[in-house]
Structures are given as structure tokens and as C-alpha cells.
Length: 403
Image (cartoon, rainbow, N blue to C red):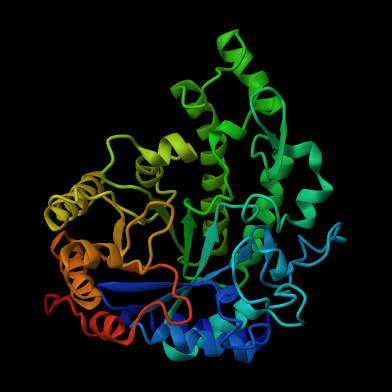
């Protein structure tokens, strides 16, 4: 490890007792900044960080990959590419052409540069670890994925789905854990398991041979047509949980305190989205000590009573976590609507108030529910306006003098 990284880590550890009780976590995706900064340099990463800190963030989570293409020099993914590097001209959106973007072979570890700068500034640093192995389901497939089609997921009926390699294969899990080891080597203090960004993966794509064989051994029949069959979800969950449990074991072996966070999506729905769409039982993982905190990444409020229903959802989650007896809870301050997840502009629009006023109320609800902080997802170039940043920066939660 470079001396600079060791010194930075020591500074960060010394600052650990100074973190605010009500944490303000901001996600950074450096891919969203090429129109503002030279993102493929260490200096560019620092400029991005400075931009995001204007939100009042006390903790930074840096996204580690685009699909499965690392945004740092990865030994695990250092294989010959079977397709050209990511070309922004292929993006299926009306955006300005940005040319080639290669964060993995630009000659510097951009994530480590950001981590070192966070340590110097007394800001907590972590990793925003997405579930996806691709983006938009068709591109940014990793070299390892392209070299191992025998591990690709499958739809019911046997149609291969190259967007992800199945965790039912030991080789895939071991590959992912080697990537996780690379992230741990950057000495993060927090890692967030983002379940929303999956690249389109759901348990419906896990009809692979080892999974189907195990089903037949257990139940003596062919796998179910419907992937939401509780027995099928439980089978897929077995492999997802094993993967997360081994993440925790890797963290423990470092001897460092690294918090593992996991998302709760669409809180407030009658059905458990985390279970039906990702085969994740966050309660079980929290009770077992695999994860340390939950991030309520999105809520489904009753728009007839948006504030009251949001407060109830927040309160219900906090009570459930406190009943488990361990774990922190974070709530969203999101600047946009993403796949049906309402951000604060939706509250502002429906209630006829300013975005800053909507953010102030959401902060108060998160505090009054007993939350441990908020998350800002994802802080792009200017999507958190100056007045919104001012509200977030100024928000304080009083603590007892003895704390």
C-alpha cells in the first residue's frame, strides 16, 4: 500500500469519533461529471468531491463500477476485452457525446485518490457497490463475464442471459469476492449494497443448471414457472445470502471497522420488494450481523397524505430495526424520480411548495422517526440546487451532552 494511503487511513481513523450523529451520505458517480471536470485524473476526482461536499455531506460513497467495468485498475478484470471500451455514443439517451471513458486504465486509481482526499478533509469514505453486472442490460459487460459464458444466468426454458453470471456457481462467487477484496484494499469505512441498480437482474433469471438441479433434489419436480414462488425465492436467496455473508467474513479478516449497508426499496408497499425482486431478506441479514445498517432508498407514500404516510413508513422501519436490536437506519433525500421512486421534487410538485421546503420537511421526518441520517442519491453536476444544499448543510440534530 502507498505511504500516502496509510497516512490518510490513519487520519480517517483519528477522525472517527467526530462524525455527526445524524449522518449525511452522498453517492458519487464520476461518470456523471465529464462535462464539468476531467474525470480520468486524480485532480478531476478531487474536483468532483468538492462539488459534492457542497451538499453538506459528511460521508461519501464512491461508485466502484459501470456495470461490471471497474472504475479503478482491477487485477481481477485485467483480461483482454472482446469489445471496444465503453463509448458514450452508444448510450440510448439524448446526451452529448463524451467520447471514450476508461476509468480502469487511465493510469491512476481514481477511487483511492478520492478516498485519500476524504481522509485529509475529515470526511468518511465508502464504496457505492451496485448489484448490476451491466448497465442498460446490453453493454458495459465485464471482461470476466465475456470470458465465462458458461456461468451466464438463464431464463426459464434455458435462454441464456449474459447480463449477469449466477451466484449458484462457486467460481462466480469467488470472482466477486476477489473484486470485493480489491475494494477493501482501498480501506473504505462503509460499503453500501445497492439493490436497485441491478442491470435488470431478478430471481427470474436464475434458472441455471445447478439451481434447477438443487430444486429437483429438494422437491422432486421441475422448477416452478413463476419465479415469485416462495420456494424458488428461498433457493435463490440461499446463494445471495452466502455471498453477503462471505463479504462480512472478508471484512472481519481485515480487522478494520467497515460498516455494511443494504437497501430497502419501495418501503411502504404491501409486498416486500427486496424479497420478490432481489431474493434478499434484510431482516435476517441484520439479525445475523451480516449488515450493520439499512438504507430506505425509496418509499411509496400515500399521496392523499404524503407527509403523514411518509412519517408512518419511516417510523415503521425504525421500530422494526430497533426491535431487532442492532443497526442504523438512513432515509432518502433524492433529487429525481428513478424507476418509480419519488424524490423530493415529487413532494414539492404535489404539495405546491419549493424543493427546499420539501427537503426541510423530509429531513425533519427522518429525524423525528429516529433515523441515523440521510442519503443523497446520486449527486450529479448540479441536481442539488444551492438552496437545497443550504437546507441540508444547515440541518442539525441535537444530541445529549454526554454523547
